[in-house]
Length: 71
Image (cartoon, rainbow, N blue to C red; front, side, top):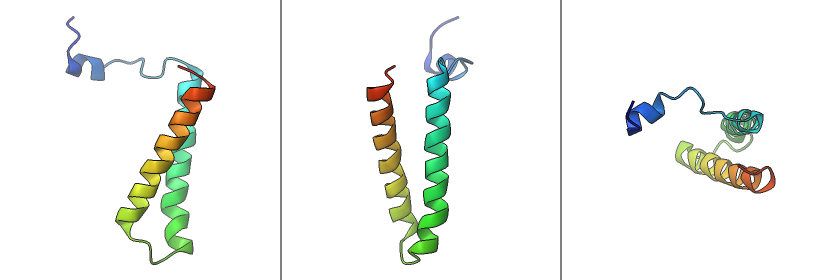
């Protein structure tokens, strides 16, 4: 089987370690919480700004996680 980009997407081992699953769960929970609570407490925030904030949160958490836990 060739290692094309499409075949790499079909791999079943995206989460090689338990720390990868934990990172996915933590980032998902944070993003959902921001999408739910930010408009509730700050109604004037635009949806685009919420998406930018979520993206920044994801990048920061993933960077810290991989620095602390490693790959």
